[in-house]
Length: 616
Image 1 (tube, helix red, strand yellow):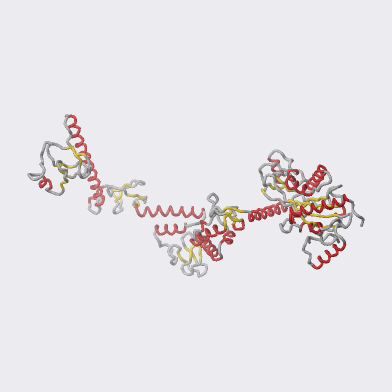
Image 2 (cartoon, helix red, strand yellow):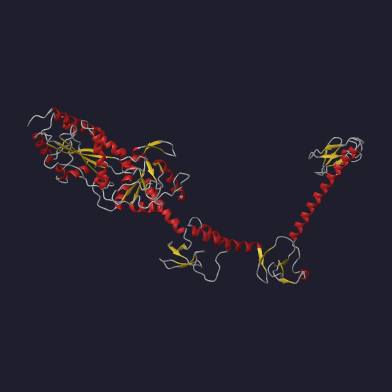
């Protein structure tokens, strides 16, 4: 082999350094697919032997069409010079895109056209070829995603790079159409021209794709899907295009650790299939990012990794310990309606899949049993057979037939069917309906509530009112005599016997009395209260009159406080035996002693006691 020039050796060393840097920066996202003309023949033979025995472990990622297993960057660094002057390295780099606004809206071409027409700009986003487009950039229909499937950038680093010509490049992605891929490849060539030969450019290309590719395509906010993606060998040199498809499969396998290989292949479905794959990828990446991050539980306020959290159907996340303990307590207590998201503004019900993950098998079996029992209990026409406890359906007359033992029974009293007779009173039937109302849907609750109101009215009528003997209208007696007047037909009837009467002549025969004894006693008690209040009012007015009269006559009012209630009482005349106008108690004006009992005044006043009459 002829010795290489200094420029060729410098190119080789720069390529090796660039490959080492890309492998260190991107890790498993960067792979060397094939190294043709770089390794000596003995190294290629040893690599083929190791590959055939399955013992190679460094850099084994797919064959290169007779060149043996491709080496890694460390193996290339051991070579001072390539084995041939026409060497070439075929590499694959998965570039993970970053939406400029943090998220991107996916939209089908049909939806973008309809939205543009509705906005008055029909045809602005309906061009057939380019897959990505701005689509108007506003809020509309579509699906918001934070992660896009990566762009597979296949590179050919050959002799003469970077001193003379740029590397060969081919872009492909699940969402990238052929025209969009060609546009990005052209922009990468322009970046090479602006930078000029002499320096590696692969990292600059990858960085530009990651940060500016979407803006270049006009898809900074909305990505319209409507065309097939680019081929995986768009602008590689002819020599590589003629090679077998093993290189392409190696590029997809290069990211097997992250599950991104399938997105670099050519799409084999419609735009709807591509959309579903992209949404699935976004969900997987969101879940992986959540699992790796640290989050604070809103219940225990502890910071834990995402692997210790449970994400509910409403997208809220709580640590597994808190939500599992809360669910266990509610299941143990039977309060299934409280199995909801702990967020006070959400309160979404916990689904069966979430409960199965956080509950033990015993608790989940109890939840299933209680749920089935509650569902059957909320059915307004469901009843249990009193003989074998099998669920049965009742008709409008509360008659049910067991489908297992064929026993016909009444669902109200659980006895044999008794047509034409009432088994329970209105109050008992009302209580049974209330027990049925514990849970149930809106329609069931409204129907049972209507039945409850009707039965409640009937129960109230039977308890507090009587029916008119002429028209049957219910009438309730509030007070007064037993002579009733119907508000419907105007007929007179007796409250005690329920017969229609002419007037008060019915009460003169002695069979019925006009006033009940309880009514008379109530009136007498009310009259006594009225009289007592009138007497107290009169005494108070008399007491105030005495004080005002003494004040007008220029004298000092002679008054004192009642030792029993504390009210002011004025002395009338010279009598020292006072009676309080408020509490009616007797006391002595001189010593303020309370005089209790009959004859207390005679024993208190006298030669040995206080004077009963005095001017002061």
